[in-house]
Length: 335
Image 1: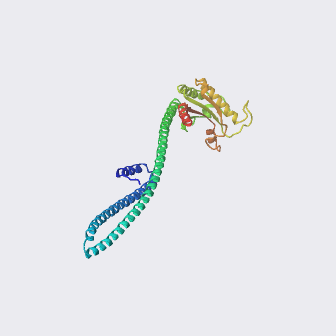
Image 2 (image 1 turned 90 degrees about the horizontal axis):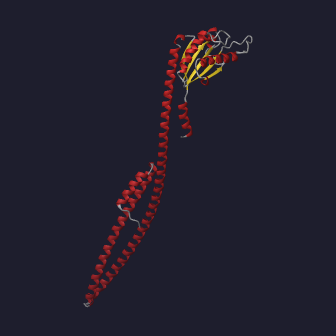
Image 3 (image 1 turned 45 degrees about the vertical axis):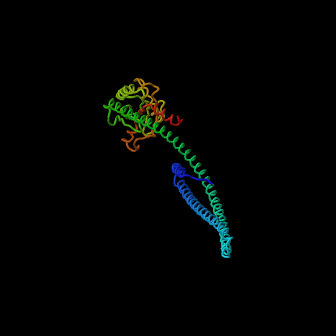
């Protein structure tokens, strides 16, 4: 039979309250405490009853000793002594029977309580094993949470780096737009527009500023604008340049030299502007020339004014994003 001191019970309650995760574990612990309390009460009652039985047995034994002495004295007496002896013997038998019954009851009670104690001890051992398993599971969960928190901290640090890089990129793009706008402020209006779209600087030059109708040679006024732009780009070595030629949807009535359609016209115009920029000091490896023909209009090709808007060249300026790509690459590889 296993005894539990109050200190052990308090310690067990403390450990259980620290280890049980959630309502289910708490309910198991409360149930265990209730059963243990009931067992302690039953044990106390059995011990009290046993002490009472022992006291009664002692009292009976003392009475039996007294009667035996009295019986020896009365044996030598008269008829009254004989009657007293008979009564004494009868009382002795009754006391002996009572003593035997008390012994049997006490043994049976103790046996029943011992069985109950053993059952409770087994149940308590099983509960303790369950608590151990729950504690191990809780430790594992805490370890998983710690790992997740570390990973989250690392990801937040990467996110901070990414946000910083994006902010620097936005500042660079805005500074680039201001530099280009200041350099080309004499061409504002329908001839030339500078704006930011999708994190890039778009310099849109009209056909009127750059080319004569159907021509791929840039007019002197347009060449001056491109030289000024090239001067700005020389000071921005970390900016990539994409030149896109655009046309309206009016088809060629007849081929002109090597040009057979709007694709040819848009590509040749973009190439000519790329040459002028590189001739103005922009590194050729930074420049890309492309033709979009009539397929990316900015206005419906329904009026002469709309078609004039579509006949344009767009120079798209994009700061290099090497640092940003490094951060993104380190996130994708988990470094």
